[in-house]
Length: 256
Picture 1 (cartoon, rainbow, N blue to C red):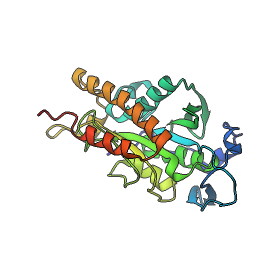
Picture 2: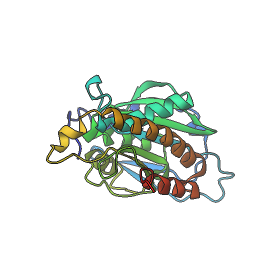
Picture 3: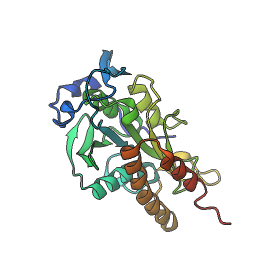
């Protein structure tokens, strides 16, 4: 469950008139491209088959988006761990989050030799797709290279999971991303466990609650491990390393 903190103010297509930030992206040959077409106020993102005669394949850029709510009062809450993960990646990779485009705070850089666009949507959780959809279409990032990072109440606090694709699991922010990718679910996601509300506690109150000191230690470890997982995914794809990562995460708090 997610919170609607504000309503959208402009159509997503309006943001496509901004000049490109990633000038180097436009010169990188891609295995698959995204074609953007306008359907009302939404963007359709469709994968296309590569051209066998296009020449050698270069590195394809990644769009890495963390979900959360903007503003100081949401900083450090359970619902904003997606933002924290992007901030941690930016710090570890030396990427400055200093640009605004498409209702988002952006950082442009690379992981290894692979170009990345780090994204923190500023449109509030329930409308974060309005930021991510136009950016993916504008920079022609293939679905398989759109990594969405978000909080997950079905996982124990501090447990991570990397998936190749999936549904929204009643997460309103993730659902909005899917809607603005024209219903496509075939994009990677990194979910960060925040635990579930105790007893009869209201779910919304739980999401906006800050972590206890013990939980914060677990989250700090998860963020460190998450950076390694993102690096592995960007540089090696869904290899055996990711499978082992998920297995270790699943049992990380189990005591023999």
